[in-house]
Amino acid sequence: MPITGLLEPSLKLILFGGKGGVGKTTCASCAGLYLAKNKKNTLLVSTDPAHSLSDSIGREIGSEIKQIKGVDGLSAMEISAEKALSNFKIEYQDEMKRLFDTSTYLDKEDIDSMLALPIPGIDEVMGFKTIVDLIEKGEFDKYVVDTAPTGHALRLLTLPELLDDWIKVLAKMRWKYRYMVTSFAGEYRTDSADDFLMSMKKTVKKIEGLLKDENRCEFIVVTIPEDMAVKETERMVKSLNQYKVKVRQMIINNVVPEQVHCPFCRARRENQDKYIREIMNKFSDLKITIIPLRSHEVKGIDALDSLGVEVILN
Image (tube, rainbow, N blue to C red; front, side, top):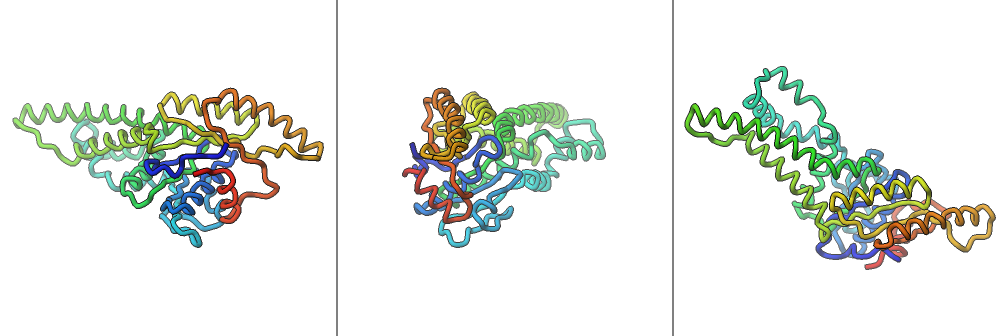
């Protein structure tokens, strides 16, 4: 069964996720190229720290949006979560310092030390915020994301909630400051720190809203027919469902063709069949696409284009 629905006008964000080494980058690259070939202005994005997009499509890609040479309608970029967080801190450092200065008893040195501390996962949130901001700008029809391996991708799902809790604590501190000002001065006027908190709150809601909107967001899980991959895939789909991120399609990659003659290949296929049946049973409600193992690596525009024609249906 081929991958379907990618050309739906309402669908903006298409994420490919799964265990490391299952072929997420190849599948994302293939989808991006397919969409561009079908007249959809597409941005292909990598949030995977390994950043293999350049190797996959055979073109140099960096941290800035770059038009892919030889492919009309396809651009790409590799997002560095650390760089996104650094840019965020530079942009909002004054507001964050004011927030702590007015809402705590910390001195300047303590505030600087606190702001230098990393909030676990905040870099990934800021990396994803970059994608959300790009979608809001509306320069592209489709945004295809090669996500980080399962652990990172699942942590991203929990981070809006974590970040929301962090914002609530800061807001409570801010309300105490507001009460004191109102008590002594008679009135309170909002400032840049209040605007910062409101902006962060909106960011959390945007990320949550986009991921949970099944009309605008499609999360396609990629796996291979092996025991560890199947177990990790099961955990991933369960977590995605728990956070109300709709999964409709799954790809089983690197499947040995049925019509093989060498004893090793037949034995390999028989072993894979056991896990393919397990996947089909566990995820019977999903559209499942099987991609056969190639005799060569699927790298470069021509190879990706050929794969897209084979496994993606309008």
